[in-house]
Image 1 (cartoon, rainbow, N blue to C red):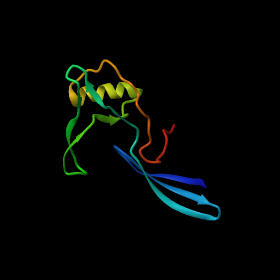
Image 2 (spheres, one colour):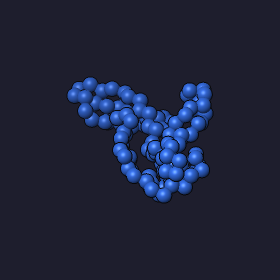
Image 3 (cartoon, helix red, strand yellow):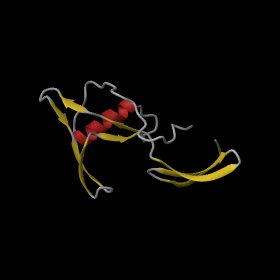
Image 4 (spheres, helix red, strand yellow):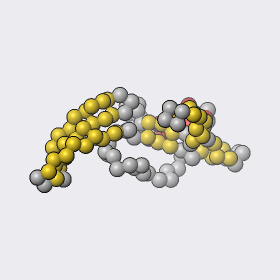
Length: 115
């Protein structure tokens, strides 16, 4: 398979691209949703020995959702660790003193970070 052409259909908070893909003699048009990179944390309050969650309204669910603190890597030059500390402070009001990477995943086989 070979990607022959890329067109950006929408670029806002997320990006939507149209790809022309060639597989042998066949060509296909594919739409790709590109949510960007994000961080998330399982936060343990070590004094109270409790995990902390945040309740936020989510448009997709049309309701408040209980979730772990998370956010997008959307500030120029900000490392994942800096973004995670910022999100925890914004969403929980906590300043964390220790971060430990548990896992790094791609929740869907979308694009990797591009130049």
